[in-house]
Length: 99
Image 1: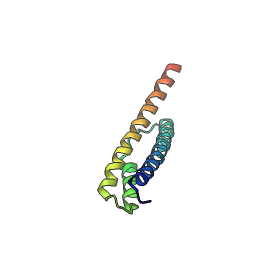
Image 2: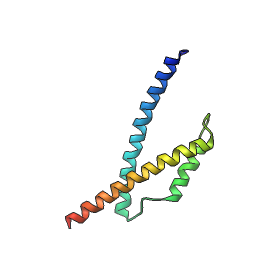
Image 3: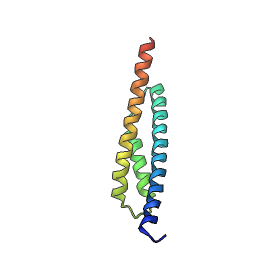
Image 4: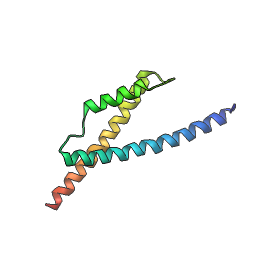
């Protein structure tokens, strides 16, 4: 793999894998929201978020810096939390309408 087009194709393939994985993560966030709702827990869990950060930064082989990984995961976690909250809010509304 020597040409610019080859490397761009590789990046395109990786991008599609990332989209698939991010959507899998989002689905998991919805399921976690369902469980948290049943348990009466809030969506925001700072201890868990810090645990995720420690895990991803500790296991980062580079070349992305620790700070870059942290920034990326802050965004990923923020979006996951938004999905979780929206899912929980929708379920609360649905439950309230059934009463």
